[in-house]
Length: 242
Image (cartoon, rainbow, N blue to C red; front, side):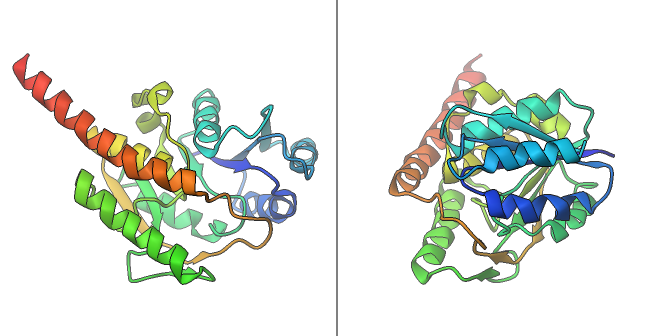
């Protein structure tokens, strides 16, 4: 079974230098797609070098910083054109440790989507300020209350999909970014009846670089959750009338 790990980057040069070899150690069935948003620090150039040295590494260069959600969408579309069975998404900053990838592959035998949860068995987050941790915990509570999603961690960005899951979703209709993107993708999968499993991870805040979190991303998530819920209710209502 072949897997492709999608890694969006913006100023992550030092992180991908260390991360890519760790993923490649998992074996020849693992391929990596780096989606770089024209990083000023030379991440794209290093990604090209890694691609030249390792046939399992591919790179997409984008013209500018267009957002996490669109980077993943472009990565998903690329991966679906390849001969891969599973598609991962993960951060470049080592907050998502590649050592958990085998756990995902074991769990996905019984699921369609597997997420790496920071809150499955209590709180497994290291080096976050209390305000950031509380924001993340509240976000998951908020999403569960409004949407009905039964996940301990609704905003995690460490995931593994069976390819048929992404093939069944209209990726062009997903407009969210950041937290919102992760929530929306989870919801679209759950709404289609796919089984979503969770594996516990220890989340360690980034080794290098700076966080991409912003107030805009938080505001988008707050309102997008209601859009998802209302859209689902309207589809059910008009579906019954037909």
